[in-house]
Amino acid sequence: MDRNIFEPEHDDFRKSVRAYIERQVVPAYPEWEKDGIVPKSLFTDLAELGLTAAVPEEYGGAGLHDFRFNAIFIEEGAYAGVGPAILGPTLHSDICLPYLLELTTDEQKARWLPKVASGESIVAIAMTEPGTGSDLSGIRTKAVRDGDDYVINGAKTFITNGQNADLVILACRTGEHPHKGISLIVVEEGTPGFSRGRNLEKVGMHAQDTSELIFEDCRVPAANLLGNEGEGFFGLTNNLPQERLNIAIGAIAGARAALEWTKQYVRDRKAFGKPIGSLQTISHRLALLETEVEITQTYIDRCIVEHNAGGLSVADAAKAKLWSTEVQGRVVDACVQLHGGYGYMLEYPIARAYIDNRVQRIYGGTSEIMTEIIGRSLNLG
Image (cartoon, rainbow, N blue to C red; front, side, top):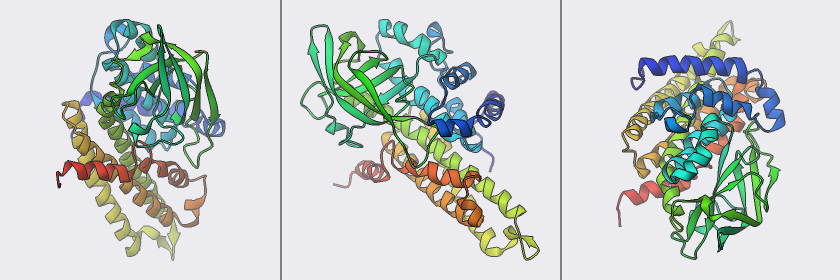
């Protein structure tokens, strides 16, 4: 089924993104995987392509709010088998940038947005702590007001862009209330008391840096507070639908890529003198996977349209994230099986997808948390 949410300008944009990824990302990707990080130049290159188009024109962007363009970056990374390399830049643009657009003062916008728009300043968001994951109310990193500064103590973990980041949007506790005691403060590179721990060794996603961040008597100007003190929790929850849509887009694109690689493999692989794809057990298995991917893509596309119109609800975003990541898990696992022994060899993209994509059901809120959010929306009691 043809997708009908894109206009000709999106198709032209996709060609530009695809060409850049094929030319600049795919050849360098193995080295980035070994390094455990992408170069900062990737952010500036993608910004030039339009990654940060949502930034207003006066700060170096295009003032364009159309998430279909954002989706194209995510999808093309997945189709090329280099999704982990694109994850850091799209977190910068899709997940971090909204905070700097919606919660900043004019002074803060002038100070941060020009370099964020150009990709020169890379942004990370630090929510997760060693003892706190999906439950944001459990945050323990503390910021205490001292004159014109906040003094911050605590630690964060599993932070995407943690090594590369020039600006960290830090969720921290400024009061005791589980929700109204949370604030967002921007910590800048070079701030005394702010340091980075390890670039964490992960099962997959090797080209994307994931770090520990440490704050020891870290003194940050109060002028770096985003929004009002105590309103950080609500800022976080307001932006979660876009984060979960970002993950859902990547998940179904990853599933589609795995399916395409596998269809080509079963056409090429011969057994008993004919392609193994002609065997009924294989063609029927792929028929079911194809159907599941197509139906899921239709829902995700509807979510993109709803989000562009400002109507994507928390529950609908949770449904998108839950279902697409679970579909991706099933599809990739089945596709490894259909590759046989070659599916377990890292020279094949399906094997790398197997280890890279498992985390999709964990970050951005686990599948269990998504189910809880959807259940609450049903008003059953």
